[in-house]
Length: 226
Image 1 (cartoon, one colour):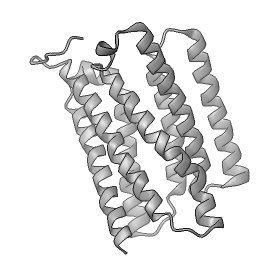
Image 2 (cartoon, helix red, strand yellow):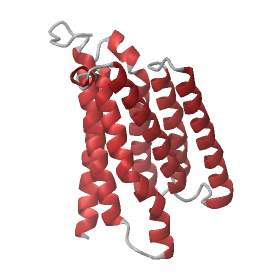
Image 3 (cartoon, helix red, strand yellow):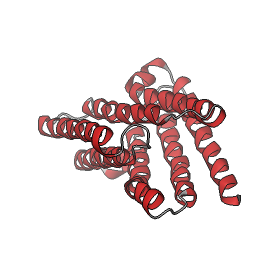
Image 4 (cartoon, rainbow, N blue to C red):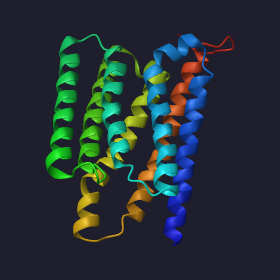
């Protein structure tokens, strides 16, 4: 029971940080929002899915796994287009496209033959994490070769990369093994999901920092250079 209370509390903290990031995006001047509009879209859709999960799943007991799957499918192309606009190398863009296509192909196979759509699509989520980590690591490498490190770490995109790498490096094994631990070994996943939600708080904190730095670039009192 104590673990369940902690899980709920951490989940609320995660949603609060998501909302904070969304508010920062909303109060950013229009020019700044344009460059991070896909991040804003991910936050808005994620917050909507979480609220629907609370109402539909928590209050009415509906199975919300299909909605969660749709959100999972939305995230990868959102970040693909986000990074594509910042990368000039055709080879890297093509590689990103191939990874996205492989992700959708696996998601389809998983939905039809493996986990279906009534269970949480943890394998698809794990594949999503792998793809997004490759995106972030690749872009990190590009930035460190093109810019001095002190310049790169001051950019908003640095914090977006930190968010993706931190969150998905932790949740990748969680998504990969949760189904086996819960269904086959009958082990409680509440402690594991506490770790998941805790790193989710960190994820949205990093996104908030990145969005705030982006906002600072477009406000008169900015001390940062564009």
